[in-house]
Image 1 (cartoon, rainbow, N blue to C red):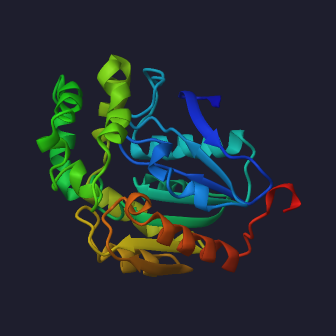
Image 2 (image 1 turned 180 degrees about the horizontal axis):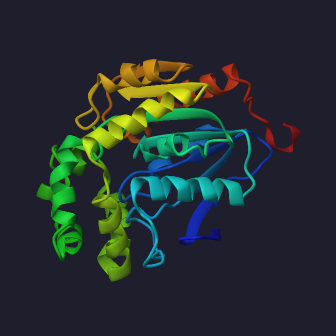
Amino acid sequence: MEIELSSGTIDYEDTGGDGPVLVFAHGLPMNGQQWRKVVPLLDGYRCVLPTLPLGGHRRPMRPDADLSHTGVALLLGEFIERLGLDDVTLVLNDWGGGQFLISEGRAGRLARLVLVACEAFDNFPPGAAKPLSAVCRVPGGVRLLTGLMRVPAFRDHPKGYGGMSKHGLPPELIAEWFGPASRSKAVRRDFAKFATSAPDRRTLLRWSERLRAFDRPVLVVWATEDRLMPREHGPRLAELYPRGRLVEIADSSTLIPEDQPERLAEVLTGFLVEHGAHPVPRHGG
């Protein structure tokens, strides 16, 4: 499926149905495949997965598109509004910028928030990813990066993308994520715009303070063996949100949907039911 938004055309997946709406965001330069192991475990929920312009998108955005963290967050909010989605549970993993819908005062359609091992506070981009951001500032840097991702020693390095999953990412999945940028100069432009857009530390921390205004239920799911998202950020986030709750998941790194999909689906479903979002069986079954 696709929808035309102010910055360009966004592709998305939608499982449909009458169940409560879950909107899943992804990381750089990923897409909805980040959730491919989790969505099938959420029967009775309508799962909507936009491919945001973070480098894994096939359709370039307009040259003047705002692809900063706040720009992409507002684009996500526009997507939710244009589809007419209400009572939404927004689920983030890796990229934490979706929280800026709250700091920008655009969270009216969100009923719940689920933060799964994601960027927070001043950790934009995560420490180990900062060198990659620096590479993206150099002319031709994104093209160099996409080429290096074909080299197993670089691709699987524990201080790079290899460290995002404790049990390893399939090479074909990484190839899919980096494929659009390897083929399109315009997508590489979008990739670089986003990858180099993180504000300074003082600005990020000021924005984080605004998150205290979100008075709806928040589930924080953190990985105990994460190399990118500091473990102390889990309880710190849960304390920041007035109705936040923390669950830690073992034997996982950042991509909990990849490493522990069953456990994540179990925790997510429990949170949804606890807060009134009960699954709706298809065909009355």
